[in-house]
Image (tube, rainbow, N blue to C red; front, side):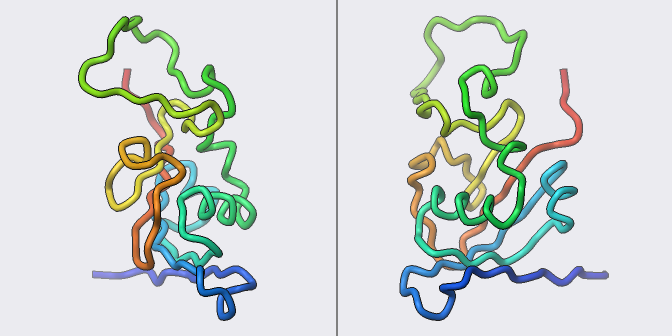
Length: 137
């Protein structure tokens, strides 16, 4: 079995900031192509998903692949309208949604099922940035 070494990216405050958090980032599809690897360790100042994404997007230009600035960018076209979605359904504020088909997961759970972009991250957490190459119809 052949393994690929992960690369480490850190911000300037790595050794001086007590709020420094290091997470494992896993990338799929178009994000993986843009980043150039499927997995890396990333250290950033802060402890929330929002702070992670801000730092990560400053280092890697992939925000446009993942984050929807408007509701239209977050919605797939052609879905049947739903008056009352089943279960408990909570909408993220505009600008905090992922693009249609793109997802951000923390430890295997979609961020909108946690605390959205305010989800607290701890050292060693896994953040997945998902944007597949192919979509099923």
